[in-house]
Amino acid sequence: MRVVILVSSSPIWMEVWMESLGTLHGVTRTEDDLCVAAIGPVKVFVPDELARRLEPHVGEKIGILRTDHDYRLRIFGLERDDESKSNPQGLRDQTTSKKSLIVIA
Image (cartoon, rainbow, N blue to C red; front, side, top):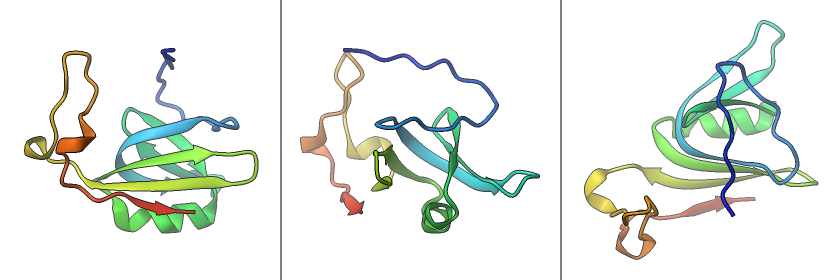
């Protein structure tokens, strides 16, 4: 199954079981003091505690999964073109990657 999400410049609230995956471009605050993480082509609202955990990982590939209880953070590390290969469908071959995967629950 393929899911397509239309991207807008406004931050979105992640729904339960939604995942945002991509390079973390930055973590900011809105005028209302809400935390926003720019991940790949989207901006998502995140809890304060998660925003603090994200800040040291700007520039790294991450994944945030919102569960029915909390948010789960995966850190893949820095993206480097020479470390992984994509097949014709654009999917990464994880077996060729030298990056480490860190899961923070």
